[in-house]
Length: 144
Image 1 (cartoon, rainbow, N blue to C red):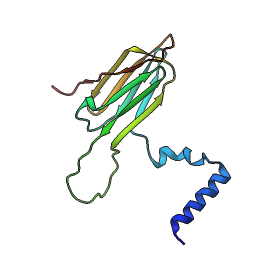
Image 2: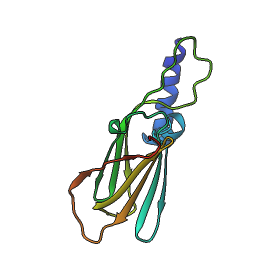
Image 3: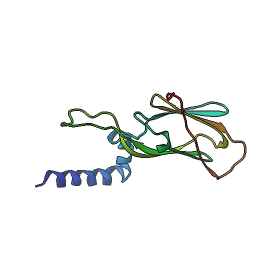
Image 4: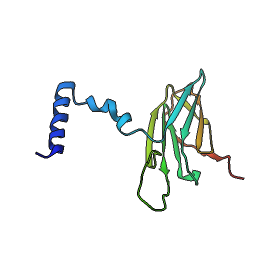
């Protein structure tokens, strides 16, 4: 018997026993989300730190905000010149990350900076509801 067929059978049994959404709780462990984000909520603002190592063109990073959702997309490119991979821990490739914010934010008051591989977003609480989307411009700080 093919071991992969046996594993599929085990998965079906687990789905039947625990429910079909059993494996969704392991998504972040099996495939960590990229880019990695730390989000901090203040009384009137949200600060997001986004790990984007190796980004050379900040125009390749897309940041959009709609009411209470932050969307970050782009690609983390790492060039390996030759040879067989021995260890690969740095997450790279195309990404499209959608984050729910703890409250609606203003689209006219958003600060975005990028320095040393870290994108920092400061979002300010919105007092009125609005569904419009706004593209965020990022300032390059470590280039002189």
